[in-house]
Length: 205
Image 1 (cartoon, one colour):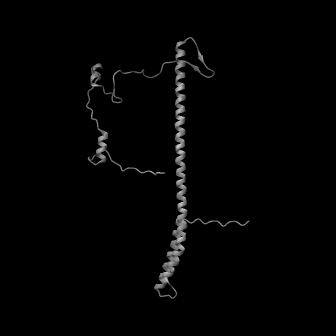
Image 2 (cartoon, rainbow, N blue to C red):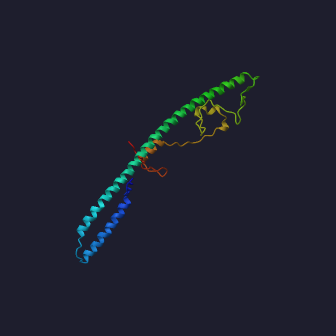
Image 3 (spheres, one colour):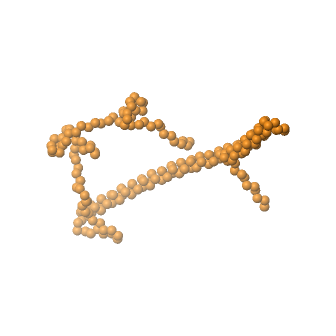
């Protein structure tokens, strides 16, 4: 059985090497013509060179486009997989949330049973259940609104706290949304923030 000849892959780099070889040939013919050698025709040499070069360039571009198509196909497939994985992740997250809620309800129910029946021992095949106090600081619930992190007290509630534990401070608050809007429209300049150009992304449609 006769083997098929191997197809030589023509690349852009190989076509550039081919072009370099042709240019060297044309340059040599040009020098010969300048020296007055007979039978040397630069115009014919250029035509012949271009005739031999164009098929190489065309083949190289075809191969290049094939590689681009392959990469685009891979990106499209990767996008499909990404969406599937996200959907699977959302589905699993919802299932995990349901199981967590069920587990929490069972824990609360078991805890209530233990508290209502202190004389009974709650023991499974692998675990023993009991109710114990939490460690760490005892929790405190406020019936007034304290701003998180800063512990700022509403002026109407100041008198409800010990006077020596209240400290009056001045707060400077930035209108961040308006500040950024004026920066983007170049209405103001500032050395505390930098407006960056919009980013770019690859769109597949």
